[in-house]
Length: 548
Image 1 (cartoon, one colour):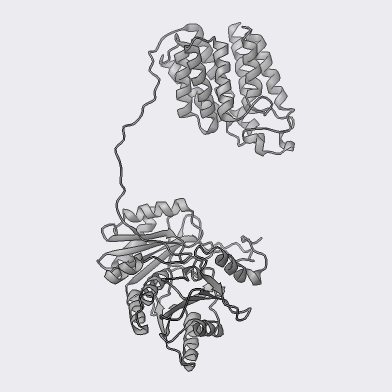
Image 2 (cartoon, helix red, strand yellow):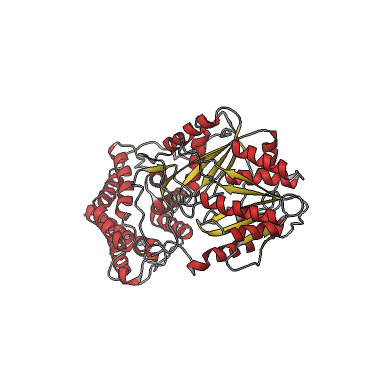
């Protein structure tokens, strides 16, 4: 099956362009209605009074190229099919449509198809009496000996600088020279752990092995220059930074951190942090991104681009634009911190002895520890399989403190508060928080003068309020509530029976109203008791047996 959302493969690019145009924040883009096979996105506010700046190439690199059309950047973008250069006719029509007396500049990535199609279109346009110049972006340093380096993410920076020059009324030759100067001061290098998937293809690409990354692969999924045996973020950043810094030498740089399409925002933030601590840290003036600027469909990779700054480039990068895809540069500065006094919300207590209370604590903790595998097995059928381990973890913490005589056994209200505090720390997921709320609220109410049974019911009420579950929702409440209500009559054995009946009732509940089981269908729930309810029932049963 394809890993892409799409309707008609042949219409994919056209449909995507429509989506881009209707979502453009400045409402300033149009698609030129020329021919169904020609896709040109242009500024709707263009008056031909300045030099036109045109770029383009294959689609699949979004937001490039249409996302950079707008005031301050491109006048028009010519969009080819996925990873395929647009035709000569498409480029020619774009030139003719937007070029006035001041002429136009073509910004072309250094791929053979783009060079040929844009180049021939430029020559044909000159026959119409139009002034056309072209610059070739060749920023990829993956293959040091390559006479024809590829144009990759640095192209977006050339769009920005050339667009700035054109917007400020520079002549065609000036715009060309400034754009060429930008090309001469750009260096890029990319890396990926997974190549891109093509819409409509169901092939599993296994070129890059697990635990490895490919260095210097192209923006169309072309194999890289080498394979690196690591996926460590720091090591990968260092691997990119070392050759980039060697190429660029010393100076002040803007660095474009470009997501190739498939890297999560979390990972991109991590990589940005690593860059901030790399060998480039003293040369960083501005960060652009992390963001997709020149992507490669859903490639799980990223690239870094260095632009050596001068006054003109710096002004150009900061000039406001009206585009969909440009990212404003951020001045680089180390992490800022602010002193803050930590809040220690800890229960103060003095360890004390009480044999009866100690026996109950011992029974409860041992029972929960022994139940670990059984509860996990139950939870595997109706949840995520960790209930037993979660409860056992909390029980082990309290059991250890009991063994060390480090519990206020003779002060039950403080004991409940302490248990609440510790469970919030050592128990994972929602269970730890819910049980902490239960014991903390119960401990406070016991301290305020309520009976133990009433205090525990008050704790239950708070747990229900914050957790959102209630009686009948197929949770531990179905065992705990009837048990505590019965305990008000001071009958532990009856309370245990009520807990057992409540637990058994959960096996007949075809729908869970809360918790992990609420995401499980009826067939998986039938005949299976809720693991939390089982835990409650078994704890009450064990306390009855200990009392005998």
